[in-house]
Length: 102
Ligand SMILES: [Zn+2]
Image 1: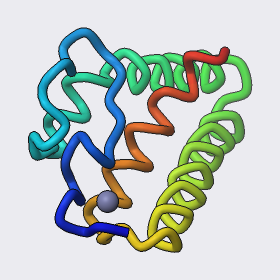
Image 2: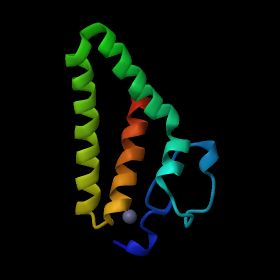
Image 3: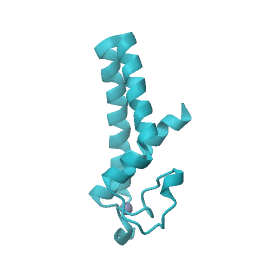
């Protein structure tokens, strides 16, 4: 694993028309939020709907699934040799995109 490319678009796949910058561009948390906001908004939307239907239990469940996917993505990236920051942003971007499959 080449850590010189950690925290760049080379490692953190952001899928959006906004993201067609060169692969060597550094990615910050703000970039991930800016590009993947729709996916994150969908997570929040699902959380709100589930909260309205099943109240705290449902909201906790959604938060738990989100956290679990984040943890799996994070440790998966760490195990592949990414830096901690790169692993976190990669996991965040991936989990945000999960809603595309709903
Ligand atoms: Zn990396």
